[in-house]
Structures are given as C-alpha cells and as structure tokens.
Image (spheres, rainbow, N blue to C red):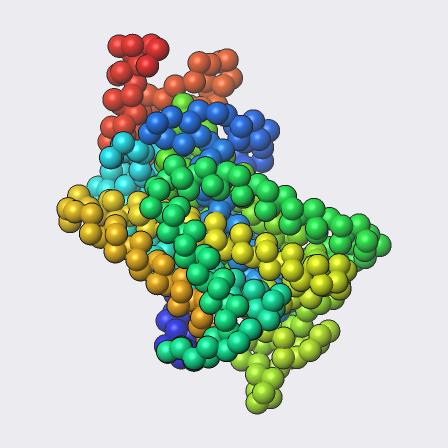
Length: 506
C-alpha cells in the first residue's frame, strides 16, 4: 500500500503541479493588480460585517469555516515536514505560495459567490457549480464533485485524525494496549477517538449553521492562542530572530536539502495548509450572505494570510529558534540506516512528518505545559478541519443529488467520514500523509486548470473586482448586477436584483 501511495503521489505532485500552482497565483496577482495588497484594509473591514441570514452565514462565519479547513494539522505537522525534508528555505516558499495564493483564493471564492444557488433553504456553491454554469462543462463539474467527495470524505480526514492520535499519546501516553484489527492501540487514544466521534456526529448532523457557529468561536480562539505562544518564544529568543529570517531566505535558494526539495516541500505543504487554488475555500465562501461577490473573495484572500503568514510562520519560528529539528532525505530510516540525515539537532528517530518538532520546541521553553499545549492545539486544529472537510463533501453530494435523488448519499458520506476519522486515528502507517497529498493534488489539478480556463472564457472574477472598486470609489450603494457586466448564468443574483428592484427593503 505504501509503495502504491508513493507512486501515485509522485505522479500527481510532479513538478508540473508545483509550477502550475505558482504560475496561477502569479497570473491572478498580475491580472488583479495585486488586489491582495491593494485591498488589505478593505479585507480587514469586511471581516466584521454582520450580515447573517436564515439562508446564509455572515462573512466572518464563512471566513471561520474556511479557516477551519485551512488552519489544521498542516500548520503544525506540515510545517515541520517542510523543514525536515526541505530545510528552513521551504518556509520561504510557503510564504511565496501564500502571497501569490491569496489572489487565487480571491478568484475561486468570488466565482463561488457568483455562481452559487439556493437549495433546501441554504446557499451552496463551489467549483462544481461554477464549472457547470460558467464553462458549461458538466463532465468537469461532476469530475470535481466526485474528486472532492473522495478527497474530503475519504483521504483527508484520516490525516487530521492521525495527527490528533499521535499528539494525544505524546501528552498522555498510550495507556493499556488493546488488540484491534489494526494492531495494538493504546486505550487513551481510543478514548480520544470516542470523544471526537461523538462531538463530530452532533455537529455535522446540524448542517452548515451549526458548523459555522462552532467554528466562529473556536477558530479565532485557537489561532490567537497559538500565535501568542509563538510570540513568547520569539520574545525570549529575540536576538536570534534576524539570523533565523536570514537563514530562511538564504536557504530558499541554496537549501541544505537541495533547492528542489525546498521548493517542492514548501509549495506542497503551503498548498496543503492554506488550500489556495485547491477548490475548498469556495464552498464556504458561497454560503456567505454578502452584497457583492468580490467582498467574500477579498475575505477569503485574507484567510490565506492568516493561515500561512501568521500561523505557519509561528510554527516555523518556534522550531527554528529553538533548533528542535533535523533535515533528512525522504527515504531516511533510522532503523536500517538507509537515506541521509543532512542536519541533526535532535534524536535521529524523531518522526519528521508529525507534530514532534513543534512539541519539542515548546517543551524546550515551557516544559511539559508546552507539549500539552500543542496536543490541545492539534486537537482543535484537526477537529475544525474535519468539520470543514465534511461540509465540502456535503456540498458536492448536494450537487450530484440533482442526478441521483435521495438522502442516502449524504447519510453515507457522514458515516464514511466518521469511519475514516477512526481509521486515521488508530493507523500508524507513514503513508497516511501521502494519502492526504493525493486528495489535495487531485482537487488542485482540476480546480486550477478550471479557473484559468474560466478567465479566458468569461473573466467573471476580474469583472466583479472592477465593478466593486468602481462602486466603492463612487461611494456606493453596493449591489451586483451580473447582466450589466455580461456575466451569464448567475441566476441567484439575477433573481435577487429583480426582487430588490420590486421591493427595495427586500
């Protein structure tokens, strides 16, 4: 199984996908005249618009839901893996992906808003919807929907759950060993699994509203708490900070693990972490109640900054400032001596693709409390990410339900995602991260190629940005008329505008 996963992964995550991700971000950055920089103040302002409705969630709630997907184990274990395999320079390439990816996030999330629909009393949208409505390619829409259901419902939840299990046992130990089909599993890990499954079931059976209300409280709290801990570490090692930033930048081009490793791991883990271009963000963006699609596009662009420039950088600084990391080749095996360890600061047996570096970094400053804090952080990071994955899978099942009627597929997805959480939690195989990478890569290929094709066919995201900028410059009021802009099949907005013209108070 591990060999198969590795082979498929190498095909999907070829240099072509890495180039495509960077090129798409650069393309949309230039086309939007670097809107992710020009409209930074507007992004912050839009975050706190309280426009929740019976059918939609507020911009902040949509941000929280999308951040719950972006801010996950990738911010802790993923950053550690990037440094461990790609060297400190990989962090620089994560920053590049975040900066360029913010424009990609704007484009895909604006498209999610433009082509959203109202179904079963709530707003739904995402790549499947805009591929069908803008490109007129139902086959591509169905392909993405199926890929998203497989990736978010099957492949990705196990990665988050696996990290939770590893962190939990590092904090509390294994407990009594219990013999299972998957081998011996610690009783403490099984208790953690039971708690996660019970709470997960309660929330996902409550729909997007329950997910939104949960994440809008948990996500800001957990992200802020994590950043505060990182700032304390930075403050205590203030004299080392300039040297660390110098190391990151210089190593990005002459990495100890090789320039290719730094770029490859930085881009891969960056995309896995912030999800820009992956096609996940538009699902939550489409659920938001806004006056203009560009507003939510800008909010989602800001979420990429929060994920990578804030949270991922916090992890990287803690690891690098405390020197709690090794750099090694991907095939390194401490037991057999195979592979190469390029730089060793800590025990060679320390697992790279895990939260271990981060836990050891905080443990070196805060003692046992630091290790426990990372365990708690991973629990919340991973749990909220699983919720986001469920919502994405649910939205794509809803899209396919127009072809396959009935509630059975949706119930089946709920059961499968809980089963995969259980599998990921008790499985100790190293290929669990590889499975997650396959899921990310599949969606990234389809979505990035799709949104580039949409630009050359209709340019709706750019038309929306120009229209919003013109209305803001004129002093408002803000509204969206897709027909006036030449945007076709944005039926939700056409109906909404017609209703507002008949009843201005509507």
